[in-house]
Image 1 (spheres, rainbow, N blue to C red):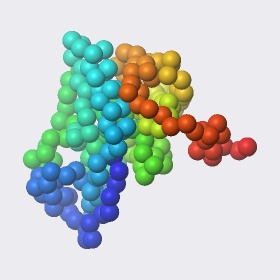
Image 2: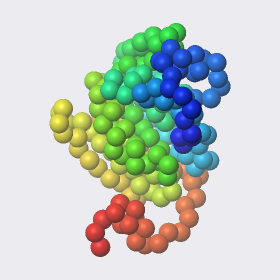
Image 3: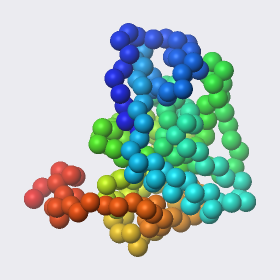
Length: 208
């Protein structure tokens, strides 16, 4: 999703909840600021649907749940909640009530499809905030403009294992759900534009 302009004044959490309940739009909150979340690109939505469908197929009958971007997920150090692109877990679901809104407490996998306006935040601060969720053990980041997937898997409180996948023939093993997802399925029906062979290097700001 793409963040839009924030509201002009500070809001209380109760006021934020009232805004959420009275609008068809999604908003996010931090320190009194309320932000409207814009619609996503076609590529973004295709990837979200592809991934959700593949996860659902692989996890069928195993007591697991896959949610899209309308699910509210509690983030303890970035209250009250966020809207990940995809959220999944196996086992018991735990919700909290936030001014009559249901908020999931215990996700294990969180997925963000990167967009130009949110990529830096998703890779840095947002990841740090998500780490405050006790049950959170895997973070999957998907580039919508080229075959590029990054997976972070929790090893302990201080260490997350980092893996990258850049080939459509590759597959990503999600230990939090004990299933494997191929990049070919994630990017099904996505047409990539031709890019400069140095684009990947420069986008990551690596030294030449």
